Length: 278
Ligand code: IPE
Image 1 (tube, helix red, strand yellow):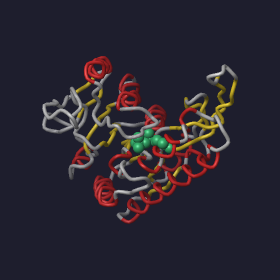
Image 2 (image 1 turned 45 degrees about the vertical axis):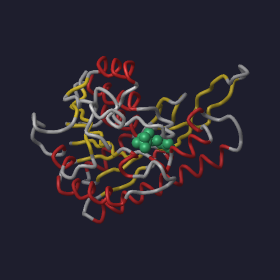
Image 3 (image 1 turned 180 degrees about the vertical axis):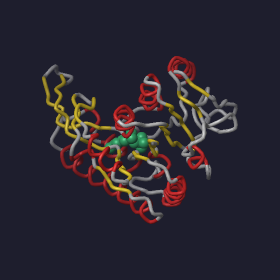
């Protein structure tokens, strides 16, 4: 089976709060339907999550009561995005079911501590396609604030990449694909450097070096991003690659790229994307 993360930057407009990109979502849904494979999907929050989460520092946990209604609002917004993705998938015949992390997952100091993968397994066994997403979840951890006082975290962000890693570890996945808005991982930032070179494969060591050299990363931007730049997002894939899983970063803006990646054949020399290796 395949495991897919649709990055928030291809299904939403990161420059406009709560703005869906319906054309991209429609095309990607068609490619998923055409692939006819056993699959679980995770999507990012994009501008349905990062903007408010950043403005109210939700990623840092509880600091003041004014954050509480915002937690509720972001949970509603990411569910709205999930519904729009489900619509696109259902309309092309994919038996997509939404699974909201906020109703079953728990973080402990920002790290995932409880996640119901069994639910995913049963849905998959019954022929459904589970579709989960980056969310704000309850957090049972404690931290010390600037004044050194102990505070309960109460909530924090669970990113789509953390979910991808958890599912990748617990499900029998053959290939894990992270769909972004660039061709893969480059040796410097392709959005600012026209000479940036696409890497066929990338190791953790290589990527850390690239980041140190040039603050690179395949889709790093100045936009608010509460779950970190590409460096943190790739961490999930490096951890899965360490376990021997086949992990890829590909461009979801190029028609047919996702469909090829979802095939059963090995992705050969001519395939454009980056294989993440340990
Ligand atoms: C972020 O999830 C979740 C929230 C901000 C609520 P992701 O980190 O997976 O989202 P993208 O892919 O960067 O948009």
